Image (cartoon, rainbow, N blue to C red; front, side):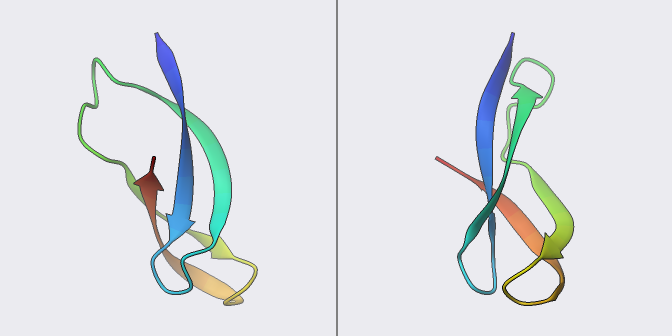
Length: 49
């Protein structure tokens, strides 16, 4: 079963992306380098509640 998660920028703390992940195969929090339109650069985005 896939669950919905929100990704937030670590620089400006804006919640930019919504995605899904499989908690069975990836129980830890997800971290991705994605584009932040507020910072106008690629930054690390972490999973939030």
